[in-house]
Length: 382
Image (cartoon, rainbow, N blue to C red; front, side):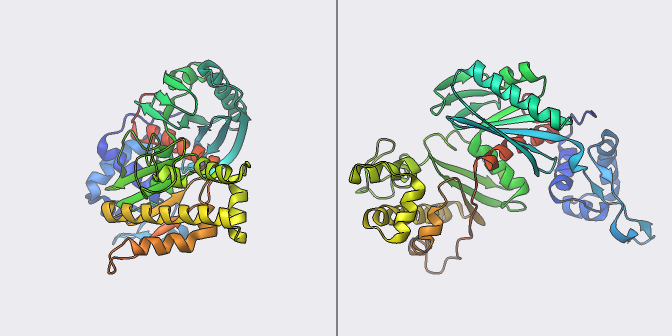
């Protein structure tokens, strides 16, 4: 396999532009990056020699430039490398294989029967071997998990797994021989949406996830703003309604107490004495059953207030709502949007709110994008 590292900052900018937006003609690429043709030629030569970029024949053989020179757009061969992404939950590991442009081409899920770090690393290694047997050009592994991650290598704290200071990247690298990058799962999802999804090409972009917890990711200047609380307590003390419900996880009336799946299920259980799954609560609310309707309407108003506050302070061009709890929008989306408008200045531009129905494979794809970034950007400790 050709070695793509190291890249200079200028070379990285060229590689990213082609990877995310290509194929691009040299003229268009120079315009986007504000480079002279000579500088672009100097920067692209090592990228072509390494095999990261290729000269692709333009459709119809159209000419480029005044001299009629045949256009040879620069592109990547997306299928030339495979990247593995894993999302670890409390009871399952979800795995995907993606191309260089993050298109998912295979999936593999396995139950997680325990949380011993060596056992989890062993399971990840076995899944890697099974996927690599079907996709032999595997170039790297990305792993996403809820909690605090340091240096893209060590899970410093994960309440879902009961871990502290687990060197997961090293454990998996020792067993697979492949470069490994580990990151908070919300951060991984934000990176994937910024490069290849809803946030592509945007300067200011927000990802808000609702599910087992609440995750928040902010993109400024086209780059994710890293912080420790992307999925580690975000929303637990963001008070939406000081007279709202008190749940085991989260302050009274906080975004967590009002919006997360466990909190909604807890409220119904406390009121009825029965365990009811989130999806059934949504169906009951849609039928107009009073208790479910009240809890879901309260959650919808909380979500609308949260979205409006984010829009007021971060001023993003778009907010992407994702996670396993976004079914709330199908049942109470009108309430969410009405609440957003009520919490915004009457003359403020409408909030561009996009909803993505996602499962854990989307989170795993985000982890694979991290592996792509490490190889393309030369960042991370692999």
